[in-house]
Length: 130
Image 1: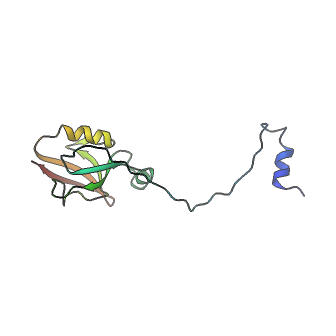
Image 2: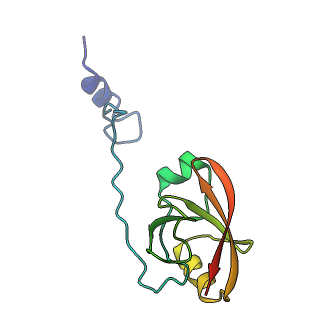
Image 3: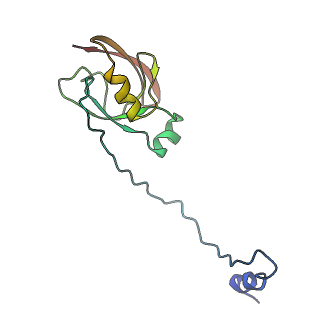
């Protein structure tokens, strides 16, 4: 009786000239996420991170940003929660953190409409920029 390794080696010349070994797959995997904050002054009080692959697969959203930190006493306090996913600002799609910063830089004082995803539900919220 031959082992898997021996039978693989016997097929070495007839296959693609490489050794093939299999390794077991494990379902218990961990995802390590490193968050990098984009250095800027947020007029909205939202300091975001890009969506992780896990966020994208869980929500089905490929675009948007995750609110990682909300400044106290900012326009977003009590309106946007940490881990909310910001999808749109004033009906403009937010692709990633860099795009969020660009959009935020052009916001005018007054009401700003945010489309967010919170616990699987899309919500429309308003913040007031002073």
